[in-house]
Length: 372
Ligand SMILES: Cc1ncc(C[n+]2csc(CCOP(=O)(O)OP(=O)(O)O)c2C)c(N)n1
Ligand SMILES: [Mg+2]
Image (cartoon, rainbow, N blue to C red; front, top):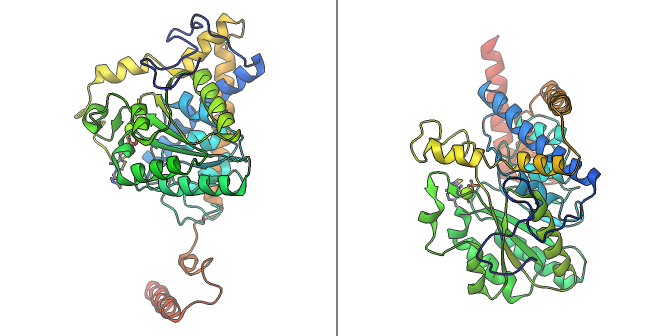
């Protein structure tokens, strides 16, 4: 049973994929297969986008490899498209899991004309109004105070929506994090704060990040419950998120949930992981051996739902071709031109922006003359 402030992370599946003593699984065979498929999409999305990055077709990417169970468990534990998500830059797995179309995500990452944000955001910082996935910010913990504010509004308006606010272990050292959690706590706002504890903040290990014995224990300081789940067990994450959001929907206040996982890939394309300077290869190898997708596959096999090599290969091919066609569509749509800087904010352009527009236009025209 899910209990606040446990010594050990809550899990339904042991690391070898066997069911924990006394645990029961409520997902149907079809639902288990969907979870497997969703996690595979996230894993393959990483592979394809890293290739595009190396080819110079996008400029920034932050992998979620190793963290698929946490992100898909969250996506499948909430009411997708109904509850609001304030995520962070590594949460493309949540976006995929709640149904943000691959084409939309790829267009954002390539800064293409078909990107709903029209290339204005940094690559790999998507948002989706229809799926209620708020555009991510690169600034750590920035999303925490506005998420608390949204949850306060939900309480005030008496809706049955709840807010999910995710962040990394490093984010819990930021002032914004403490201000936001405190604000939600004193207002009983239905916000589920989820720490995707992947044990590193670029090159800072979690034991250098905080003197607290864990992340979820920090909830005590704010007078709210703290839960702790094995973030590589998709069934446990899904169950915890669904239980906690149901509690909040029934009138409960905010909760902090820590999902213990590991980032097996690099932080982004801008860290020193490849140079092996801040963490040992043995550490990475030991977590690669605790692969969340393999754990679910093993459990499924024990239930007579084995994923064969052929089926796996066919699924990977299907995902790759979906991504390939999304890339082709995005690239064919071209990139937005400079005029979009002046659009979508003011109905009538203020005079200083009018002046800047004219100035840029003159420069563009002069540039075109010069190349003739
Ligand atoms: C306010 C702020 N300070 C510093 C940075 C630089 N920075 C980018 S990512 C990062 C680490 C964040 O680690 P964590 O919160 O654990 O998330 P993870 O990347 O591990 O998923 C830092 C320090 C930033 N983006 N914003
Ligand atoms: Mg981290």
